[in-house]
Figure 1 (cartoon, helix red, strand yellow):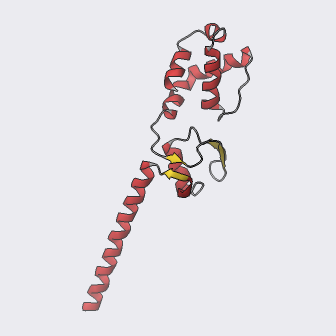
Figure 2 (cartoon, rainbow, N blue to C red):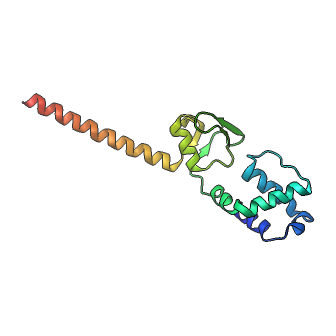
Figure 3 (cartoon, helix red, strand yellow):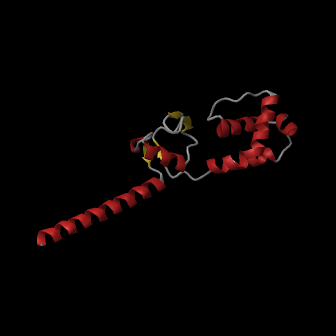
Length: 148
């Protein structure tokens, strides 16, 4: 995605509009800003899309190109999440950070993943270690009480 955005913004709008790059512009805009919805294809709309890509397209493309360390069982479509989020998440462009937030908040479940995000797995391991240490401490405290 990053390469496509850089290619688009390196050109002049008129050059894009009169070439096949206009299809790439629409595709990039659709994925970055519209969660997969079909954008308008008129010249005025494409000019607005181009200006928006110039503003923050590079940053959004970098975020989207982050390495995904998870795999969903159903990797396409939109998932509406209410609560504190109140937005649709595009499952094709879901980042690790978003996936972890959704898992921790209970809006997604581990059963929806073939492979869980690496950060989430690490956090679970740390939680297990802390619980095991606390359990060991309580056992030691009980043994000391029994000895006295």
